[in-house]
Length: 351
Image (cartoon, rainbow, N blue to C red; front, side, top):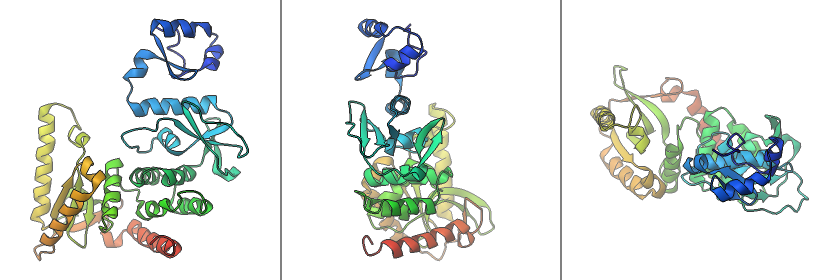
């Protein structure tokens, strides 16, 4: 067992000294294969480190950067990961940090990438005893540099968790109005909706937008004409009478990974879909790969649209956030006003 197992993983020489251990032992344990060098002068105990998924390792590297880097603040996707916000399949190759002093010449190294940007005092807060960027700054920074589907998932997650408001995001977007890539944030802000529950739903919303589809309402309760609950859908295009369902593998592994449990989940999905179609709704389904490309999602939506609009439509729709009819939902009203505001503000440049 490594002598360094109780240190933060990964660890540096400063952590070894703080624990009253000998720095010379690092080389000995590396030679024995018990410790690995995950980056220049940054180490981890081999066995638990290599068993962790890539994003867990990235969060650990980000936490090490917060602990060991005194003249920069964790930022962008690395800060989003520490905040527990949604993330794509693959983490960045290096931890993202923003220099606190814009005049510094500190260069990126093998495990940290340093950005230089204006960081006024109101963009910084103290959390757990160290400077951190306010959440709205992190969300807009991600919207500038990440793929929009990933940036939208982060924005949706921050709204869902109550970390930010639409208004705070717009204020930060205005602050960054001349920063590189900031125009990419406009579409992310237009689509941002805290009712989406995960990365796949956000990525699907971005794919639908890219293919010119209307913005769907997420997480809608479908009711019968007698107000009996028929199920909740991932997305709804109410004017078209089309339900959207984003199918991730984990959705069918809830409650256990046995074959019987998966089959039970699949049967429940089939029953729920039959309930939707019996109410006159068209159902469109897709998997993560199709959400990334968007072509199949678009084709299925168009096919469903041609079959929708039947006078036999008897479904009623209620928002999951307040259980009110969509027409009476305050969140929907806010989002309609929000999108009109963005169109007015950014129309000359974007829309």
